[in-house]
Picture (tube, rainbow, N blue to C red):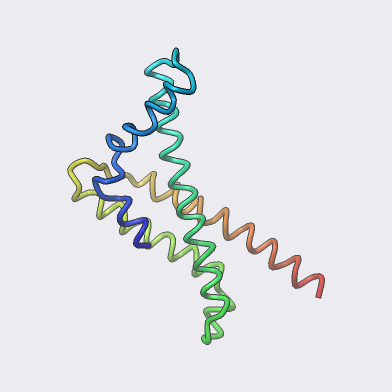
Amino acid sequence: MAFIFIGSTDLMSAEHTSRYLTPLLLWLKPDISLETIEQVHFLVRKTAHLTEYAVLAFLAVRALSSSTIAQLREYRFLVAVLIVLVVASLDEFHQSFEASRTSAVWDVVLDVIGGSIAVGLLKILDHRKNKSK
């Protein structure tokens, strides 16, 4: 979660990430258009949303799986998605105070989708593991 909140500061704003991505794209394809660079930059940033919240959900399920509280273990998949929702909402709220960042409800939706994908995959693996026992 600390990584996510650090990432929502000016340090990982679009302006700063483009400083690394644009030269890389120009090196890979010197004749790339500015429009294509912007599209790739947008996709990379949104993929980062999906990925970081999928990792958060994975870690939450793993932590909740070893909880001493039976209800947390039983509902670990749901609780993990709720954790993702709360952290994503707080992250966007935090970004609303950063001058170089924008806050968007759609980013929360994207974050929850990323977390839900991870939870869904973990639930499938858990079901297969329990079925084989």
